Image (cartoon, rainbow, N blue to C red):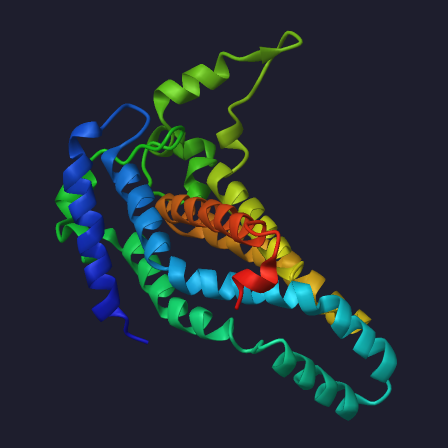
Length: 272
């Protein structure tokens, strides 16, 4: 699937933001990192109408869950009747079980294209390998967001991937008379944080799903565990800038979902 027609405008947005904040380069936070953070926030903000619809649909389902559970207990041995009764309940509540699917389908190619932009910044953002190599790409402990984090925690590559000042600062810490090793040398931090925020995002999402039988619950739990693991693996295989995108994106989604799910004492009125 060629998504250049979406990825190129997104790359232009990242470049525009980079040019706007290029004077804000610091030792631990580069303009490149800031442009990734800002473009992620802008992208997620543009998606708010779609994600709100999806989240409100989840909220509506959460409201219907007790009634669905009652139907499952009453008609559990008669799948056809159970399905018919559920559809009647959905119709009565003016709820479509597919309402949350359309936003996901629309967002998916956009998410993938943004992934392309972060993974291939020379192609979509800077158009010049020499220029990209020359710019500051620091983010806190990471000296170069263009490196994969598996390079960062490989001892031989510390000088390439890790900010020297941050390394010296952390190496100077001690606990109980024992000097702490540089945690970035053992743990790819962005990948770990990406996985954790993904776990909380999927956990919050699954909590609003309809009541499920034991097999469905087991499948859901497996998915809740597999997604963070997959994100962690991707996080150490792709440029660290992608990990930064995942963290910012997940935190934005968690806050947005929490606000929407707790925004009204009368969800029936809000969702009409």
